[in-house]
Amino acid sequence: MRLFTAIDVPEEVRQKLAALVAVLEPTAPIQWSPAGNWHITTKFIGEWADLAGLERELATVRVPAFSLEVRGLGWYPNPHQPRVLFAGVAGDEELGDLHEQTDAACARQGVGKETKRYSPHLTLARIRTGAPVTELRRAIAELDSMDFGKFRAESFWLYASRAEAQGSVYRKIKEFPLG
Image 1 (spheres, rainbow, N blue to C red):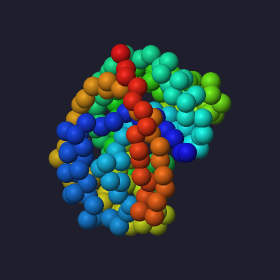
Image 2 (cartoon, rainbow, N blue to C red):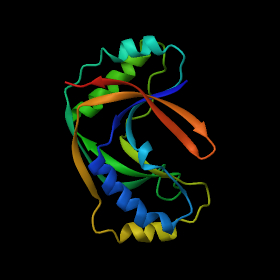
Image 3 (cartoon, rainbow, N blue to C red):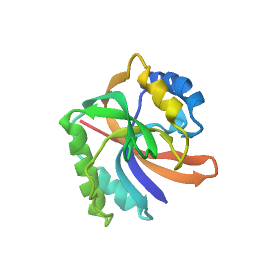
Image 4 (tube, rainbow, N blue to C red):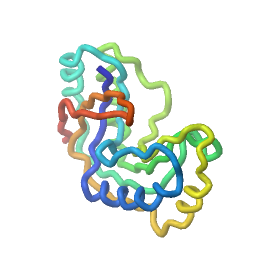
């Protein structure tokens, strides 16, 4: 089973992002992520069979609830050869703590530790090499605001991901409270 941990995005933020995507989507033939898939990943686990052991370790994570803000847009890996369009996520230091603790909890079960710097974001679209994004860039430059909302993270989730022809389908497995 392909797994990851993530923070859910509240409906108010989803609505603002959905309004943004409605404006941007006609400007580029790229793979837009469905609003139901929007989340803030804290740890990508990958293929893993021992769900009970993982759940037991994730239950040991102790981070207080914290505030997050979704603002700005960016490109991974860079603006010159974009593969992903994302909304930025800024959070209290507890967001980094949550990432570190979920990484450590998973490592105790044998999951590989992260080697890259944690970069919280919300994936809005995936871009195939060579896809035309000139009009998309222009539309982003003309936006009045790139503030999509603030919220308080009260929990994180263990998710399962299944690849399908139309894209990934996510299923919540278990919620872990913060605080």
